Length: 259
Ligand code: ADE
Ligand code: ZN
Ligand code: ZN
Image (cartoon, rainbow, N blue to C red; front, side):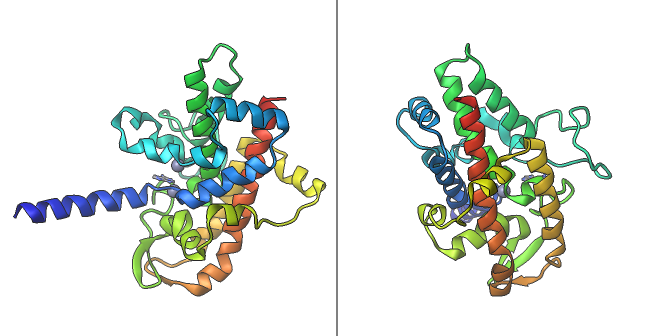
């Protein structure tokens, strides 16, 4: 009997983990690695100093790793942003009072800019910022609250049970089967002008862009649909694009902080 209880506990905990594992490790690391390629010399030096020699890819999954520690529970809602039903505009007044992804990014930036913040606080803020900018570029992290950003939309992925959120966090990226560095070094060749265009705008602009994409993602499936090769073919290019955009924008934020 005891062994069944243990097995049940393990299954429940592994399901919980899977649904909360965000952009997946590979997506977060690739975003961090793209950013590394676009840091100024000064920003790169500051980043290395704050991270004790580590790079952005290495620390990019920290935001998910701390979810297993109850001491960090307050950061759980900072990984996503939902507008209330019927709302099309984000406002501080109607935003989640526990914080959200926009708040998470802005708070991290403030700490990094704050001359009186401690080294430890800066290290924490930078690790979280890398993670959150990645999350912002997973469209369903700006999805609808009522289905938890697609977590409640069950689908089949190559025959196995999954959900829409997980397909976008990790199933497509894992099935593409490239390492994070291979992904980060196989990005579209862009002109200076194109890079500038992607890097312009605000955190809120990027949130609205993700939200718009999320609406297309919601329209891309029926509940219970069997997804596989055709879905990958249609949508992995968007994932690939979002990783590159996330990296470029993270670099812009850091280059601006360490000007
Ligand atoms: N993960 C957990 N809840 C979520 C939500 N409401 N939106 C997006 N991602 C989530
Ligand atoms: Zn996620
Ligand atoms: Zn996250």
